[in-house]
Image 1 (tube, rainbow, N blue to C red):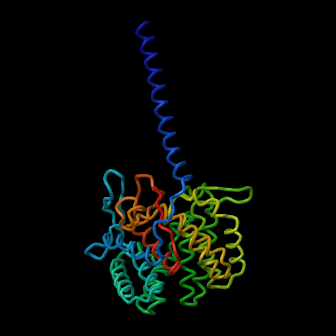
Image 2 (tube, rainbow, N blue to C red; image 1 turned 135 degrees about the horizontal axis):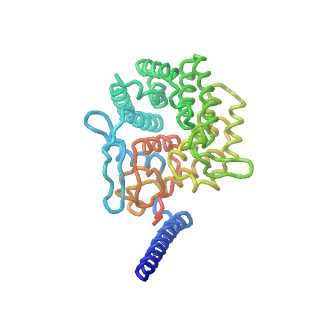
Image 3 (cartoon, rainbow, N blue to C red; image 1 turned 90 degrees about the vertical axis):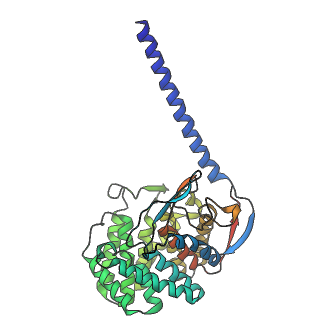
Length: 368
């Protein structure tokens, strides 16, 4: 009896210790996030243009390029080990390099970026040969290259992949992917004038909106809400598609839907809850599309506000006071916490978005 009583007391004591440890860890994590979100970076040590940040970020893409023309996709970074390649590689990853160099060439007119874009486009098409089912989601990037060069080989590739995608419905429960597909079809319609692509763009847009429900798409969870509005994690992929449909077709209802969404989203009050770059990036491009369509500078200013936040907290800057890990110019998938991921997709897309804000000034802050 005595031993049993002692063991029971010991068991209770150990459980209490475990509970206390869990509480301490949770408190420490909460405190870290609180300090991160509520601390104010010190005054700017330097100001860089969007073009300068974009060029600095090319360092990351260059070191991820392999000798076979493909890319290593990602690195995992920790305070202790630094950044180590994960060894993952995908057929379509090079599409983001196409987009990167297309954006830089259009902004700067520098022929080296045109040459790199064409080289990346050729490598991508070669990689996709025989693996077409992996390349149905690279149309945005290849259309950017086509719009610059009018290369008929690019157009043939785009139409072939678009027609293949027309019969593919594997991702219809993903709000993000059906949004991406809708946008792709809108862009194909823009360069071909073929009504079937616009019809498909609208059909996929409807599916993307239908998946604004975590019961359908568990990844597309609500992030914040008000009394009459819920912002889902991948909502901006849907609205980016709708904004492109409005731009290429003159659909005034689509335009009104996007504007109403942007007003309700209130990014300047809620941006800190948008933890993933894949949540933030399409919101920036949607805002830039709204500015292009309306001329209302508030949308450009909001896009720049979000970009400044990303440059401050997500950019692994080569400028020492703003370096997160090794200063290779990559953009971090999540807020900086000591354990993070860098991908070719995220950095390539960020370089492109920076190129859409040519010569805008951004503060490089000592955020530590």
